Image 1 (cartoon, rainbow, N blue to C red):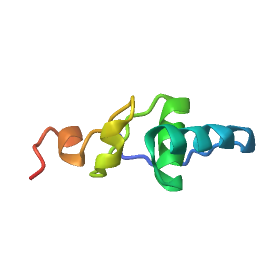
Image 2: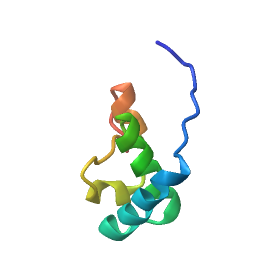
Image 3: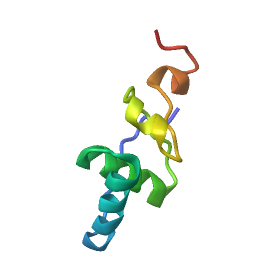
Length: 71
């Protein structure tokens, strides 16, 4: 298992996508930023935040990623 951590970022020209995601899914800024970053880099969102359940990408919980069910 690769435990490496990578930092990703959005470019200034991507910020309009963050604003669109905020409006479309009623997300706060940090959730919209994470959503757009996941979309741009084809990543899976890993979170307990139910707000992501209302998006096109959805999310996985940490337990789902580890193959366990979160309580």
